[in-house]
Image (cartoon, rainbow, N blue to C red; front, top):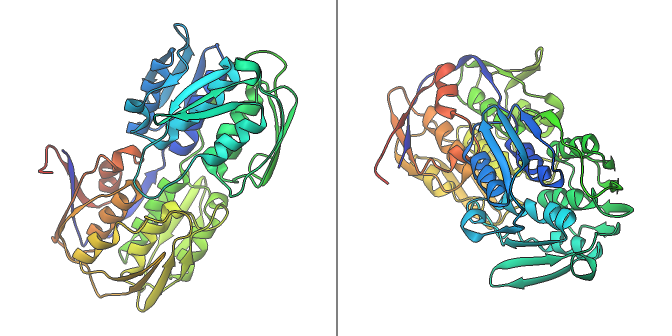
Length: 429
């Protein structure tokens, strides 16, 4: 099992290029199930989750060629509308095949999802929306079994209200509505940029999507039985960009250009980082991040987009571990998203957990240690923490298969801007 070894004390400089957005690529890959033509995705990150999704699509009967940064998907053998536990357990986003399968083929059998152990993340909103479109839904032995009207007929446009904004729920129902008869109106939708990107794809394919990226969306399904193929370049990954922004700001004296980062997608993070004493400016097709003085404490509360992203909470908490004073980090999205805190405490961070709140007292420095990644974003936070230690002080982050799910060659990118970091093959578990 691999590990990542980091030695601290290195200011960062230069530029780092942001890869395509994993959280946009995954639903777009699933949207290829709506078409029998040959689609091409460009700017796709080379990640474990992309390969897992490709394997799932192959199981479902698609021909998939992954040659990052491109992925080609076309119709293959007869479709098998069943997503088994062995594949779905690896990644929660696998539930995104449910909507397109039942919309395109009238039925689907999809295992309840797995992924990072950061909270329950139920799929009840997905199922409620499909039922409103005429699906019959039942849960049997850990599988969702869905059938279109009359035992496999075409879905019908409906009005769907999400009790809470849900990214994958919104995406699943967007894809289902793209082939439903008539118009679907969805209220209290999630508003992430990745949802806006999926709307662009569905419009390219022949559906009529209006309002993607807002809380109210109208979708008129295509009149035919399938959608057209597409050729599309994925948007940059705003969470990867935010992670490198925090890394650049973590070590005093750093000056890094984040190529491909979009300020409009990162406004909540940028505002908090500026309040903490970081300098962030738009520069060409990217951002420049610098820090010259001490960090100031800042409070954050995670919220659905455009609020502070839960996927940046762990990284920002590390930044506050060295701020001069007390910061309060409140997590409102996932109930188990402070699992990185005990590992940071091993490195000398002063963090007290109180329910869904972490109270951080800034310390003078962190200390190298062997730590264990518990989920995707926590693993990135531990790598950044290792960079905050004194020169030569060594941190080993284990279980980095988590980080490989969402960060393309993170050790190479950080080394390219001056970090003392390496991947250790076959490290002890």
